Image (cartoon, rainbow, N blue to C red; front, side, top):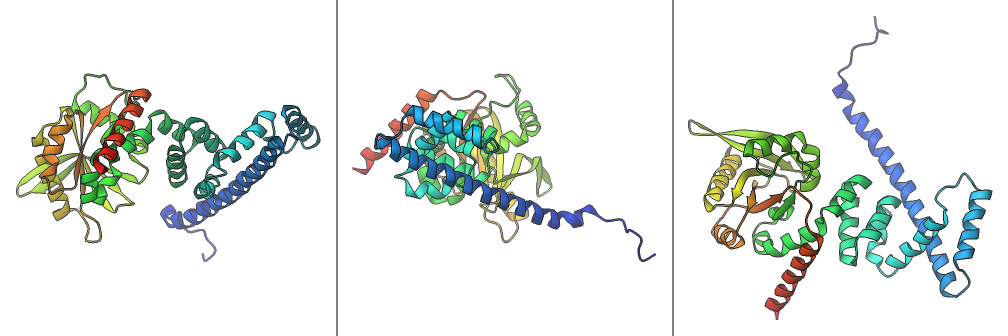
Length: 334
């Protein structure tokens, strides 16, 4: 009897699985760091050879052919990729603060950031984001296509006063792109909520991987009445609940009163003692920035108002808006 296999609860193995996955991830990162370091060193060598007039296209092509003929087991040495190594080194050789980040993400993601992000600030933003969230190339491409850098910078400028009052609001932005939702432009709140739940993985990618879904129409009881929060999340980095209210239509100040009521109920009855105060977001189709500013200026609750779009943003319009906000901020500081 003692040798019989006893049935096991697979939940008992979760800690062991975590150890295995953590080790595999660490091994992958170690190999990746060495690969990126090798590409960096090759890029530096070729850059210096070209600069001194010793190497040109023909030499690089010959080196590529030599590698493919003599070392066919070593991949990644096409002439095009070798020139990318040179560009990689030259792009970042004067940015010492980024050197560690470069080695934390894949070569594919490095190439995408290098070719798509046009400023050092944008490159640093996507490098940090990709490293922190361990983005796949598909996920990173989606964030760049949705102009996440420009949207985040615009949101920071617009909301810096409210963020200064409550650091928890830094996890939220004033605009979200929900192009992955399969709903018509004219939709109802229930359709929006159901489509978000059906596409929760993409929704969390847009909001940030630190968000964990808790529930839809989350019930809170106050007195003898039940109230329902459209969407409730938990943010692991901030250690707080995040309530999201969906409004198909323009923001109205009354919406903020409803959200503040929910935040109070969460903090009194749901929030654990070791967690930070709950944060709220009103996600609406449209908003008047002046009305939002007036409404939030008197609010004591950590809450923001954001709009959402069902299509990718216009790159030129976003870049112009970001430039205008920065110029305005510089004028105010003078």
